[in-house]
Amino acid sequence: MDIWIGGEIESTIEDKFRVARSQLENHLSHRLETMSYELELDSLDCIAIIRNDNELEELQSYSKEDRDMDFRLVIDFAEFTAASSKESKKLLLNMLLRAIELLSQNSDVNEREALKLKKDLDLIGIE
Image 1 (tube, rainbow, N blue to C red):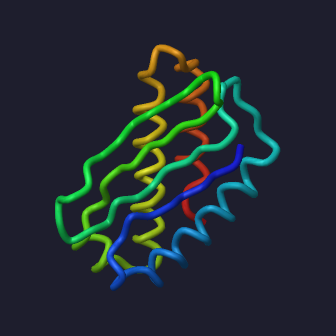
Image 2 (cartoon, rainbow, N blue to C red):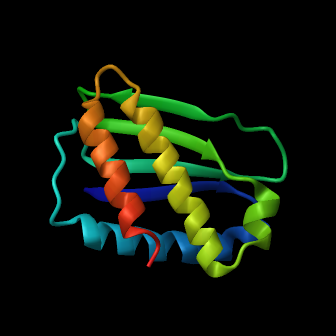
Image 3 (tube, rainbow, N blue to C red):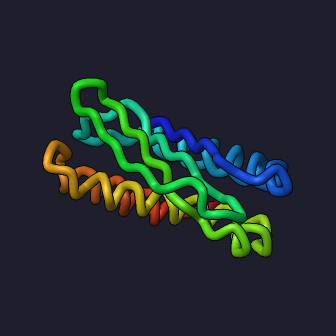
């Protein structure tokens, strides 16, 4: 299972976000490469909204036919700004876990497999 994290972020945190995202994506993708899930999904894709305003709303979209998801979830700007390197990766991981929880509630998704993926990601953690 591939992991992709994008961002709708403030420029003041772009370097911190880029480092945390890259480290987390690499860590999770490496650990998940030998695992398989019966999900109609090619990649776990999620966009973090980390802004100092409320202009962007969360979005949750899944297409079984395209094997694609488009989730855009908010992470608190002040919390991310104040977070250590380890804490910023944990915030991104928590966003992914929330995305999987929301995905599991979609009637087109194998709930058991989605929750298995969530459990595995939670066990793998950030390091």
